[in-house]
Length: 513
Image (cartoon, rainbow, N blue to C red; front, side):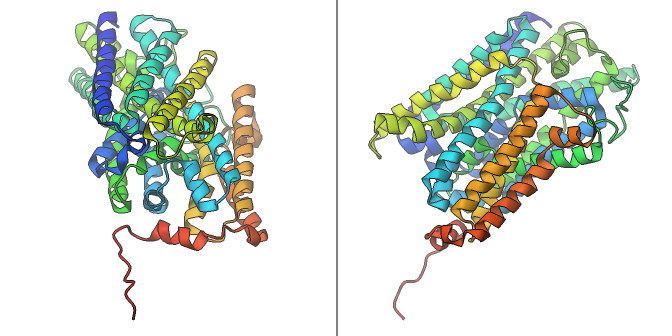
């Protein structure tokens, strides 16, 4: 790839990001601006921002890399990512907005009336957020290294600095503007080269597709034939879909965006638009994975499959044309990294600020200047920790790491949100038991797979894709413990349930009869 083209594209994306962020900085004045953009984001604008935030390095680079490596089984990934928003629309979106919370721990405390539940949720938000940030930093290093040969840590640092400037400068109002624009940058960057590659292939007609598996025990073009070397691929497929569908409603950086809508009705409209925007984007990553098997059936030694999207144009169209297309893709990939990392940082900073920094600074509630300064301090910590961890996490695949975060989110926040919104008999003890049980089981399975590698037989399949058993267990434990501890049901449950399910525009007639 032409180094100057790639660096120019990445620099342009960073410059656009900082410029739009500066506009948000001029508009951000209050604590509400920094946390929820004053709850004034329209459905169309918020949907674009959610699309910009949700479509991360795993979507832009990782999906194509997994389809290239493992074949037809990985086509379920974009399906699962998109279906997750349908589940979110049906069960969570509008009631969550009506809760009036700023963060998931805020919602947990309001619903369960328990500081202990809040603290536990805060720990899990940070764990999920930082785990999700790791592939963003890793992807940044990969993109910059591919286009320029720079050390991997340089890309990590660039993303950390740009994200921190925007978050510290304007908070949620700034990031909303940035993410909405970056969604359309990403769609343009991934679609234009795809159309060119398809036209080129149709015009030339050669070479024919190469579907030979990367390993003898896999059939690349056959569904349910390998699933990354995991035995029992049918179970693995359904467990992955369950993690993606139910994990979406537990991702902290996704949920925090729904607090920015004016009301529950606009939140539902936002989610419908998001489904359309995600469906549009996910038409394209599978094309890069399939074309990679046609034109580059074997990767050079030391090249990650996650790089196939960036490498493909120069292989298909040698010369300046292919280099320009690769540069466009590099810019789009960097936009994906920046937008997702920004959302995760906002979410983590909110939790660090409210549950750690606020206590240390003894901030006065309602003092916007002190509140904003506390948020800014928290944002530095929210970026610094995963940045340092990313320097050591060299062997984690982009989509694989994100999948682990989905599994943990599905096993923890999904039961809490669904039961907390729809089941009035949820007790504080049951909520804590479900969070701990689901979190410990999912995290143990994840760490066992990441540290020890894949295992054989059913044990390996259950550990590699744990959501199919950790999510039901978390639900069952939450329900059983809640039914056994009715005295621990929050006293204000009835009032909270009315607030969650009553439309904002409903006015009660209080005149005497």
